Length: 323
Image (cartoon, rainbow, N blue to C red):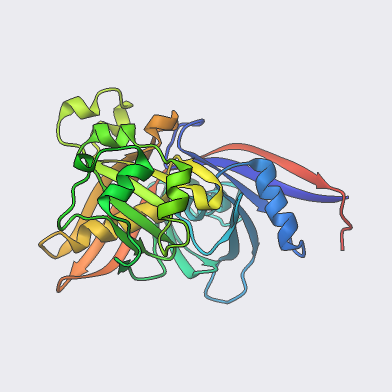
């Protein structure tokens, strides 16, 4: 019998049973990929991480990230949630200073490369984390469907899209997403992915998984949101049918692409910031904090931050040899 330890947490929230759930698994050394995928499907979260000893001296831990559809090179909520769990369980210790506050700098070795993560702690307990993407933003317009085709995919009207300089675009900061600006929060709420249309228009393209978003323009569009989300700038939803995740409550990698997309279209340099609400339509409200550095018209760094909270700990017993 093989015993694995796991911790679950909710990411991009400080309230249990909201945000995006994550399972963090320890002790899976030597297990084949098909077993790691089966464990991921057992939890049935959008992602599960497996934590191993660091493979290089410049990283804190090696982390592999799986969705129910397979392994991915990078993802935001698993990165931040894993860093939170490492500190919360004492695997990485925070020495409180400056009146009980501390900032830890971790580097998680992922398939995309080393991902730096800062973790803020109060009295030794993690409260918030921020990742910096390992890859610089990349945009591609090839393979992006027409607005008519996207209206078919989302069950919307062409008039629900923005277009122009804010036309849909494929963007990657380590994992490609199709960033789709919509004209209103109402359109975001009405969006649904029709799988037959998605198969026709997006399957096989470079950026197949869509993030739809709209700017929050007035207080009426903040009604019905939890109090900690009523100051957000953006409402977003992310659909990941290609990785067997119909909709994701909070997606750090997609929102990193959103930050890069918005920064590239902002006519000024400096550090640009946005606050995003995601997961509202799923009953899993989540808050993401985005930053992008822009110098000389070029986006030079993208960061995504949020809170996490541990929900459960346990063991998984597998009928496998220990060696």
